[in-house]
Image 1 (cartoon, rainbow, N blue to C red):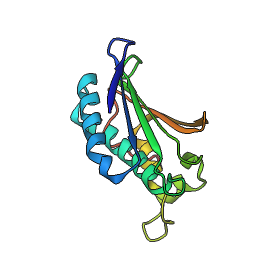
Image 2: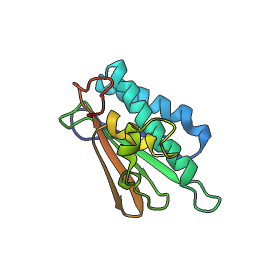
Image 3: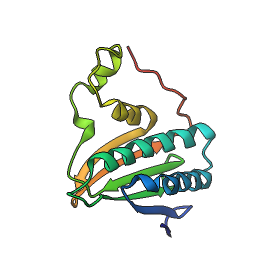
Image 4: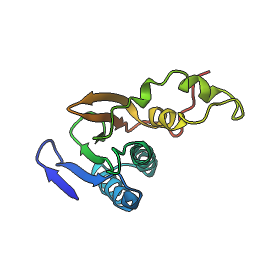
Length: 158
C-alpha cells in the first residue's frame, strides 16, 4: 500500500509489502510512480527498477523466518541533491550482502571461473549511487540514490 508524507519539495512516498513473489507488480508500479514524480529518464527508471528488484528478490529468497515472509518497506525521498533517494528495509535476519569478500574480484573473472552468487550485489553497487547498508532497529537497511548524470551502463575500472 502506498502512502505519502509531507517534507521537502515533493512528498516522500512509502510502500510496505510482504516479501512474496506475487508482489512484483505492486513493486514495479510503485517504482514507475516514484520515477514519474522525480522526473527520471527511462534509463534512471530502469536502474531503480533493477536495483529494487534485486534487493526484493534477495529478501524473498533468503529473508524468511520459518514460514513467515519478511516485510519490506521502501521509501523514496525527493528532497536531496539527487532526483531521488531510495531507502529499502526489511525485517529479515541480519545479512550484509555488501560485505562479502571477493564479489568485486569475481566480477572480473570469466563466467566459468566465478563462484555462484554475488553478482546481484555488484549490480546494485554499479547501478545505484552512494549505496550503503546498515542494520538498525532489527532491520536490514539499504539506501541508494539515482544521480541525474549517471551514465548507462557504467563500466568497471580495470
